[in-house]
Length: 72
Image (cartoon, rainbow, N blue to C red; front, side, top):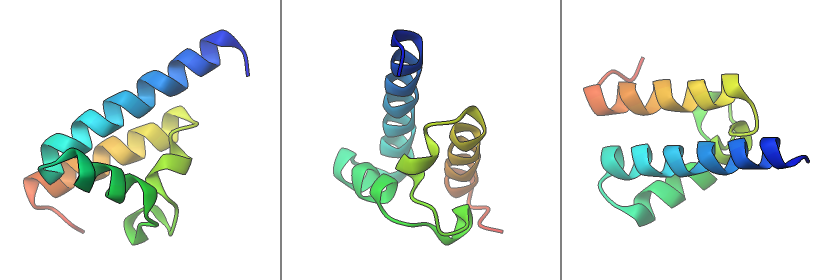
């Protein structure tokens, strides 16, 4: 992994943790959510999807839907 890819991955992880913390109410809840498989993400762990731009977008979209109360 080159430096730019590593930087992007770290940035994506930090943004996802920040958003999940805001939506879920605590850092611990965010870390737990990010590490558990999600039916809304086709059984994938959110952390595993942070390696691609489309995966990061899917996580942000899901968290926004959770925040707004839209689960379907």
